[in-house]
Length: 104
Image (cartoon, rainbow, N blue to C red):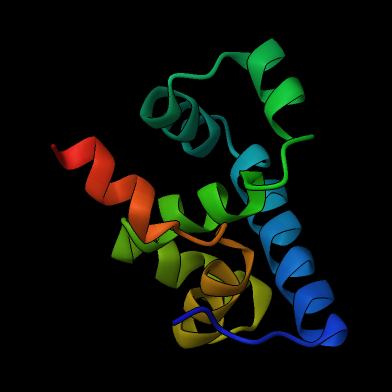
């Protein structure tokens, strides 16, 4: 079941995703790891930022690496659960019918 969102929650989730991207971009090793994991290059990153689901992808990357997530949380003064909630709010809804169709 999708999470119901309010405009202020969505704005806060977008802000956390932007903080996360800024955090990654602020360190050569962090951004290199992100680019490697996503298969993006710097020009592809510029294009990807414009996609509606990009913020969810940035947060998913952080959530997949607990040590990095904890460093980000300390940097941004947020709890890991807040990052997880922001990810859930920014993730596009899943169409269960399309998942079933692709599985067959």
